[in-house]
Amino acid sequence: MDLCRQCHKLAPFCFYNGNTFVAIGRTMIQDLLKKMSPVKAHGFRSVVGHYIAGTAGAEELAKVLDELS
View (cartoon, rainbow, N blue to C red):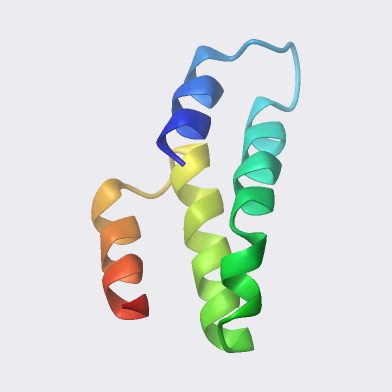
């Protein structure tokens, strides 16, 4: 997720950098999402997307990860 966030900040494309790297990050967590309840999976997917896009910080991501364990 950190790598996707860093790549998004580099803005290597003219358009859709956020969407591209969020999609990659969400693809990477697909297997984890299948093991969660639908509500937790939705929340986790949302926080991952916001983290990569830069609208959520490491604190929010850590909080969600703590709730999963």
